[in-house]
Length: 98
Image 1 (tube, rainbow, N blue to C red):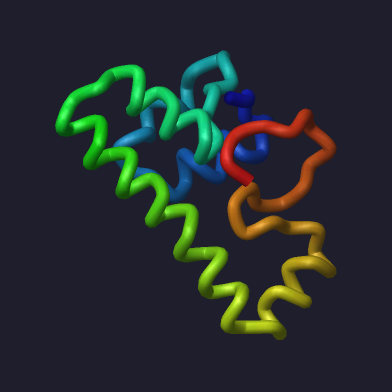
Image 2 (spheres, helix red, strand yellow):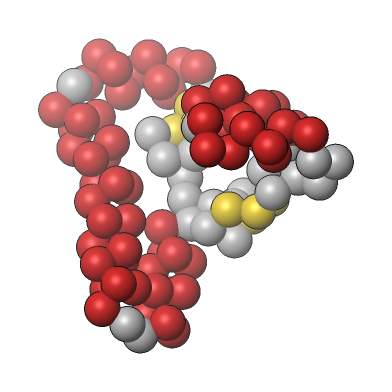
């Protein structure tokens, strides 16, 4: 689990309509890495948690597959300092899902 930076929080608020109230929160939210989300789903140990775990894995695998099939996109992201699972590198501590 890691805490988002101000820039990451702004991006999440801009891209996720259901999180618009987060814009006015003085606190920076936390996020789970791929592995942390799967661990949480396993602890919950319910059918819904298992379904969520499968969707989480799929959500993290898709960007990797896209990059593996597109060498040019991968090169451009490397030049920008971005990761397909974490986004732009901001110098913040390593954290959730990237």
